[in-house]
Every structure is written in C-alpha cells, then in structure tokens.
Amino acid sequence: MSKYIFVTGGVASSLGKGILAASLSKLLQARGFRVTNQKLDPYINVDPGTLNPYEHGECFVTEDGHEADLDLGHYERFLDIRTHKVNNITTGRIYQSVIEKERRGDYLGKTVQVIPHITDEIRRNITALGRQGDYDFVIVEIGGTVGDIESLPFIEVVRQMKWEHGKDCLCIHLTYVPYLQAAGELKTKPTQHSVRDLQQEGVQPDIIVLRTEHDINDSLRRKVALFCNVDFESVIQSADAPSIYRVPLNMQAEHLDEVVLRKTGYDLKQVPHADMSSWNAFLAKLEGAKREVKIALVGKYVQLQDAYKSIHESLSHAAAYNNRRLVLTSLLSDDITEQNVADKLRGQQAVLVAPGFGQRGMEGKFVALRYAREKKIPCLGICLGMQAMAIEFARNVLGYTDANSVEMDERTTHNVIDMMEEQKTMLNKGGSMRLGAYPCRLKPGSRVYQIYGTELINERHRHRYEFNQLYQAEFESSGMHCTGVNPDSGLVEIIELDGHPWYIGTQFHPEYSSTVLHPHPLFISFVAAAIKH
Ligand code: GLN
Image 1 (cartoon, rainbow, N blue to C red):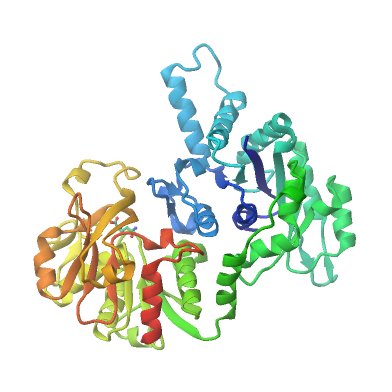
Image 2: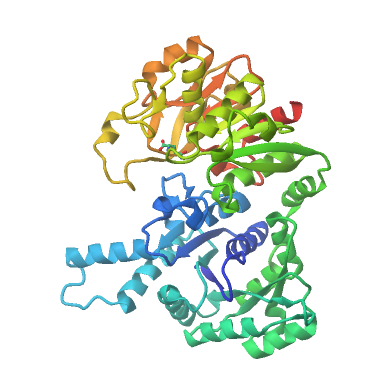
C-alpha cells in the first residue's frame, strides 16, 4: 500500500513547498522507492490555463494535455518522470465534479456538503494515485498557507487520512523563521502560531521544516520541538540554497528522508542508501562552471521570475551540460525598438523569443528577431516566438508588410499564422487549444534532425494558432524550411533558417520536457551555438 506524505505551508507563501516536496521525492527515489508527487491547489479555477502568468507564474503542460501548476514542472525535472492530469487538482475541479455528480443524481436525496462530499472527492483524487499500486510514496503538496479559508477542506482531508492510515500518512509542515536584524535574532513565534493553526484544524505535523536565511542552532530547534509537539530530530532546517538543485542534498544532510522512513515504519538498515551520483555529477557542472554564456530572453512577462520557469530551468540545465554558467538577461519586448535593439542585445550570445498570447510586445519581438536573423545571432523561438519568426520573415524577406497572425489581426491579407478550420467553431477559451504531446516527424538532413538524432519526436503543445501551410512552399524557396511536421495532420511544428548559424522556431514547447538527468537536446544545441557565437 502507498504511504502518503502531505506537505503543508505556514507563515508565508513562496517558501518553496514544491521544491521541498520534489527534493524529498528525489531522495526516496534515489533509495529505490517508487514515488510520485501531487499538487492540490485551493483556488477555484478549474485549472490554471486561463490565469495570467503574473497571477500564478508559468502554466505547465503535461503530456496528456493538462494545463497545470508549475510545481509539476519541478517534479518532472527533479524525478525524471512524467506527470499527468491526476497529479494536479484544484478546488474548481473538485467542485465541478461534485456538481456534475449532483446533477446526475448520484447523491439523490442527500444534502451535498463540503464535508463529506467535497472532502470525499478530494480523497478520491489523492488515493486514486495510491490505489494503482504503482507507488510506494505519494507526496502531496497543498498549495497556499494553513489558516486560509480556501485550504480548510484539504487540511480536513489530511486529518482524516492521518487518522485512518496511521503511520502510513505523515504531515510535513514548512514554515519561515525570520531574522530580526535589529535584535540579531531568529524568531520562531510565527512557526508556533502556524503550527497552532494547523492543530486547530485537527492536524499535528510530524515533521517541521524551517526555512531560514541563517543557521538554526540546537536550542532553537529544541524550542520548536517542545512548543510544536514534534521530536527534536523532526525539526529540520532548510537554509537558503545557491540553486534549487542543491536542496535535495541539503535535505539529505538534515536526514529528512531518514526521518520520513523511520516514521513510516521502515528499518533503515534494510533500506538502500540514496544513490545521488548522477545528481551530484550534474550539480558539480552547474556549480563548477566558471565561464559564462549570455542569453537574452525576450518576452512580455519578464518582470516575474516564475512566468518562464521551465525555460529558465531548461537553459540552466543546458548551460551546465555545456560547462557554462548561465547569465540570462530578460528583456521586456514592449521596450525593444529599432533604435535601441543593438544596445539591448549587445554582448548577448543568443536570443530566445518566448511563448505568449496577445498583441502586446509583438513589435519588439519582430525587431529583436530581425536583428538576430540579420546579424546571425543564434535564436530560438518558442510557440508564439516561432509564430513571430514566421511573421517577421514574411514581412521583411517575402515582402508581405502586413503579414500577421489572425490572433493579432483578424483581417490580415497575409495570414501566415492562422486558426485551423475545426477550431473556429470552438468558442470556449479554455477548450480550443492544441494541448499536450503530439508526434512530429523531422526532415532527414535538417539541423533539428541532427540535434535530436532521430526522426520521430513527441513534444508538448499549448496554442490555438498554426503556421498556415499555404505559405509553406514560398517560405521554403526563400530559405525558411519547415523541418518538423506532424505526421498525422501535416501541421508545421518546426521552422529553421538556411545560411544562419542557428535560427530555429518550434510550435511546441521543448522547455516542458527538459530534466536534470535528461536535459533537452534542443536547448543543449542552442546553448552550444551561443558559446560559439
Ligand atoms: N498565442 C499563440 C497561439 O495561441 C501562441 C501560444 C503560446 O505561445 N503558447 O497560438
């Protein structure tokens, strides 16, 4: 039977529950356990697909086409696994299915209530992962902070499951220990209060992880242990780390995995040691790289670090594998003009044009792309970035000055990016996108074929518009080749430019599938091209 480990958070958000959950999973996986992670989001959106990145960071996409919380990206990158729709649940999804059941008459005669109906539905979604028998551990992260009204039903589920599963279910509570500069002291009171909030909701945490910017000494740990009813060894510190990939090792040094195993009934003598050798090899490259590689990221949400999370991580994997330290400069596309583009891109070894939606910042992207194309700076365009590559090429090389995507101009006469006929009838914003993994056939002899080293690839999509195949022949005869095509629909998935050191656009999102142990070949090649530039 699976064991369930819940990770809750207190005091403040953004303490890194996702990284903590992924790190614990990594350590258990490295000991040979079968592990999966799940994220429960207390917000009412059915999924994060319609959220602005400024609200919630990047929207991650699973292979089965689910628009998910970005923590699923951490799980995949850390564990080298694929997550699915079941790995991310929101309050909105839970209510949607309860209300559908109610309409169908499944609860006939009953008053439908938060407890037991909503909580039962949450439990059903959690135990669905454990019931398959595929996992020794299901690590469940609960979004938000304890004490929020909206997370109450989730905490109630933790209470019920701890009661019913006994030692097979633990709660790890992550809190923050602030340092008061003036007093020169670390303060545990917020932790005590947040544990009290959790206790009030019926849950006694088994392990407390303290996020801190300074070392927490034994006497403070003893204090937390005493006031929060946990053993001394179950008070764990998580100090600021130079990179998120250091956190599993920090947690190992704090014996988090050992405490979890002991508490869930394992005899440590019978459990193999964690084999972190390949992880350590990656970390040595990541932290040991002395020389830099400078890459510019052009996008419209660059002010928020999390908005392009997977792109950042994929580039940093690729830089590490190329023995370089990534120096990423984010450029707001709205600010790029013909007058300042040379200044803005000075010293940059490559340009990445980001995915996105809507008109804002498009002109700046065209300017940056034209510059990279003409000055032969390696350039990767992802999704909207690839569409912008096609539009810029049509405008400035083919001479169609009004070329556009119908997303930006419905009436353009040169609709190089258009919507597929069958999509036009689907008006539901959440439902008309091409989502999830689709196959793509690479043209033998092309650069992408060389990069992937195989003909058939599978990559994830999240977009509504497509390259208009009516223009394919004209693009190709002018040097922009369609080197990746969906074998079933013929849709163009990759464009690449002849006579340029590295100019590739992908309609799909390669950044969703780069992991620490399997960094994405396209990013590795892109960074290698940047180094050569
Ligand atoms: N807005 C574009 C589309 O819907 C691109 C989306 C994206 O970059 N993810 O097709």
